[in-house]
Length: 443
Ligand SMILES: Cc1cc2nc3c(=O)[nH]c(=O)nc-3n(C[C@H](O)[C@H](O)[C@H](O)COP(=O)(O)OP(=O)(O)OC[C@H]3O[C@@H](n4cnc5c(N)ncnc54)[C@H](O)[C@@H]3O)c2cc1C
Image (cartoon, rainbow, N blue to C red; front, side, top):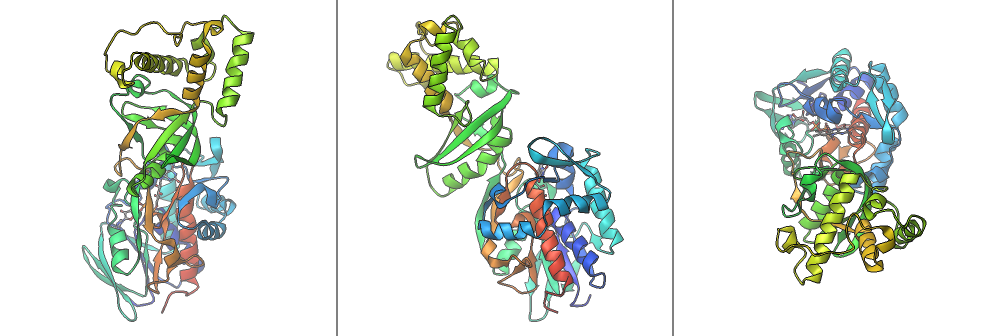
């Protein structure tokens, strides 16, 4: 193999995109794509509930967290969404839009996305070598030595596209990050991202609400100050909470905890509204519908099962407070509850002001007793990774090691739910592919 050739390590979304765009722009530059998996592209196949949320109709740097947003913006602008849509149409995968701007293949089959990418790679003359895990990449003066589980290669340029650490059974286990570290790169400490949240076991609410989903707003406080608010659907599960908003929140909670800060998360069941606003609505409701029960009123805003669970938990906590116990005492079954107005059948006309305000406070700031996340085994992405300032955003070439290119999830960028992580893979692959085609690599 000649020193002009390009070796791409990793045949996921970013690696395949890099090789395709390189060969499309320069068919005379040879490219070999190595992957440790027997059948590469596993993440594409399982993505989006096996439908693959390929991208989003609106993509900006604000949809991503991690490295500097000016760098992210520059890379995103190099391959706008309309060009992504056109690319997929060209390779036989027309896309359609669904809720929140998510774009899926018309066939609703993620397999079709992977097959089309592999077909295109073959059409443009890129060579895929599966079942070849790269164990190291060493740079010498002129070239790179790429050591694999079945023989070594030499290359004029190497693209690392090995993904992050999420779902390691797919082959993306962080080994590529270690190779990048050995090549001189700084790895911003990683945590799972887009991972379901675990809740404390003594809070039985999530168990009884398993399967119920509804819109909420989460406020993530770091050392007592709101760091970010996130809105969207939350799904109660047997272990805690999931759904887009919980998944998006996970990286913020984990990174604050990793940095040694106290991170807490509260739910607002009235997204976008504050205490005074919601209290005003409850006051008006009481005066307009004095005979309406607290439960019926609450069920106007949340599913009836959530209304029942909220009232029950709150009632227990009120009784505990009145009896001088900690809030969890009766939740564990201690003491028979005495009467309180915090009862589902209380008419609004009899709902004491203090109880109403307590309920409203709970509705806008319900604490989620998070104990952790389900980890990399269930995470859809990885936060942290290769420091973005160490790559040139015009080419994706390393500033540390000329001839080395870094793309996709292994970089310190993670997108929110909605097709953004794949768009990052396509964009970084496109930038690297074009740069390599125009001979930006050392030759
Ligand atoms: C369950 C799930 C659902 C998802 N759904 C969506 C979605 O619908 N929309 C969206 O935008 N994002 C989604 N994502 C995120 C998205 O899949 C990733 O962001 C994206 O696949 C990252 O692409 P990548 O090419 O950088 O890395 P990967 O897809 O992880 O690919 C890396 C490749 O490198 C190979 N590799 C790793 N190490 C080596 C090595 N040392 N030698 C050789 N090969 C190696 C791996 O085998 C793998 O094939 C989902 C993720 C998961 C886990």
